[in-house]
Amino acid sequence: MLEKANSGTVTHIEVDGKSRFKYFFLAFGASVKGFNYMRKVIGIDGKFLKGSYKGILLVATTQDDNSKCYSIAWGIVDSENEDSWTWFLTRLKEVIGDTNELVFILDRAQSIKNVISTVFNNAQHGACVWHVAQNVKNKFKCGDIMGSYWKALSTYRVEEFNGYMMKISQRYPRVSEYLENQVGFEYWSRCHFPGLMYNITTTNMVESLNNMLINVREFPSIALLDLNNVTYHVRGGALDGVVDTLNSTCSC
Image (tube, rainbow, N blue to C red; front, side, top):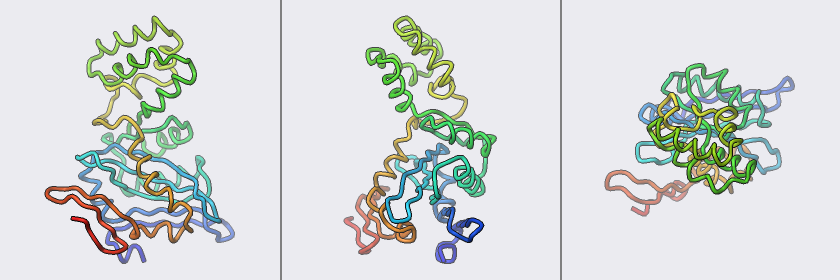
């Protein structure tokens, strides 16, 4: 029904050996077509569903040129593990392809990182700099040098980056070693990153989408995917208003 009502929409359903629901994937046709004009930086995440049947809601999102969230694909799986992420990302690859322009921003979850490296052979992946900062502060109790960290990650020049890292190393050698060898400069610093991240260095875009859906995560799966009953704040050109798809109204 979704594919008939929405041209170009891609859906997949997988069941187990007893014909019980296991995985679901959805990418609306409009989202697939529009992705060609979006920034090729993708955030992915999974959140627990709170209904009677539980499960995990997976999302993949990016940003447009105005830094607004743009959802690409949705999934419902039984649990968040390597098998379910492999299935979801394989379906996503069928929709958006795999090129060296693609960048995935991750929250340092090793299982997701391993799957992306396997499924998307050509894509780059970077670490969410906010999660890296939280890990550094929690592990090493070094809040006084975080200013140098933020300056190091944002500079375009390797010489400046080395200067900030020297300050960190002189004060906390273990922090410098962690950032270089355990995280890797190429995953969090702008001047070392091999791909094009634009200004997207955190998973905030996917967290924002998850926050919008926080109440509907209690719905059954069918109701959860009825994304027509949602309000959106739409900006573009002369348009600036809240669209209520349930009541077919717009504040503009």
